[in-house]
Image 1 (cartoon, rainbow, N blue to C red):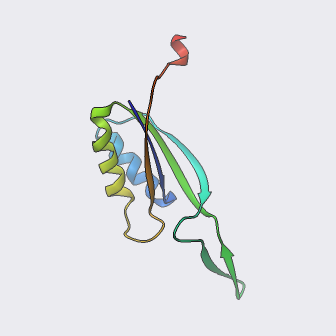
Image 2: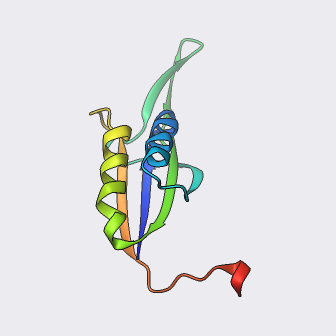
Image 3: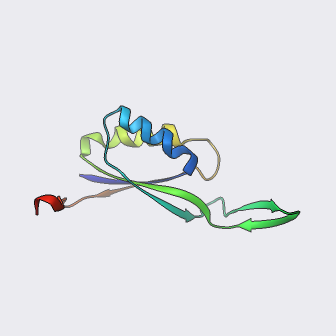
Length: 105
């Protein structure tokens, strides 16, 4: 089993989620997060002054899946979260040693 963590732009969440549902991938956890990468923040204009926002709002999608579904899920995230600009996000993949269902414990 693998765990996918994808940090993407908030405005791309709906498209990514819909595409995953269409392909039969239902389970995910979504968290609102803030961070920065190569983008190093953005400058915004507010009441005539420039304000540096160094932690950009993002969403983190977490999905645990079987190994054989990994590439398909990653491809969906890459396709639907992509804009081609800095700040599109990152995808991290981890090995899962064990998964337990709380209901069955």
